[in-house]
View 1 (cartoon, rainbow, N blue to C red):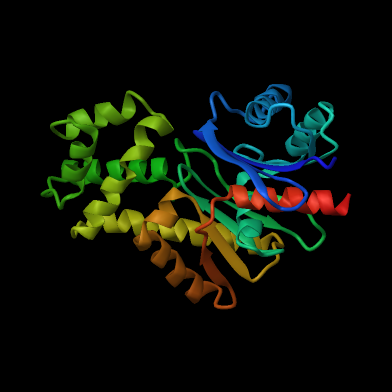
View 2: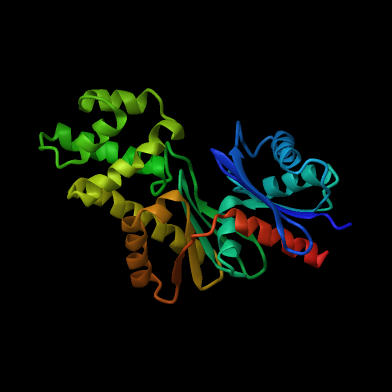
Length: 298
């Protein structure tokens, strides 16, 4: 009896799994917490992945497994994770950065992927099949278009304006309300005392809400995030990424039209040959597409 084709999208906070049988029928489609996910050490990462698969598909044989995971930013790490999973008797395995799921999820064979969700990263593939990423340096020093990075930059902008003696244009008030604090000093404390994605990221909607309500500071933060995403595309192209579609996904860009339109405008100006596609399918669809291809080519 044929086994299953299984795709996983492993993010910093949740893991999505979708599995199909040889006929193409989906037999499992679920989302679970990622737990203490980290791509390294790969032996531990492999065990976390296998535990998710075993819990979702007890006793089922896996013919092909495709994993897109946060933190797989270097090919050697991805290859070691593949080896660790293959050692568990999964016959066909491929591991990629989670951003690499976007292009196949959109139905394209090639293209450039952008994630703007909790974090922000770009992924491309050269004509000779080499995968690489740009950005994704983390919410403390980078990820300017991710939820946590947007909150970091918005907080900096609001506090700088406060220290300049400028009246609040709506951004500071939006952030203090979002964090449940009374003033600028307490906002700084709330942000600094817990510098985590879990603390910062959920407050990103407040930045967009302030921009939509007329805050020039918030609008500048969102515009800078769009410019950052366009720069990731610049970097991907400069390093040899191929494709005429830019597929962007993640909770922030899919849910915030202001950021998506800002990126669209910048790409039209810099790279009019490229078409921006905002992914509406969950990225795990791309993982399942890769797993199906693996099984078909076996």
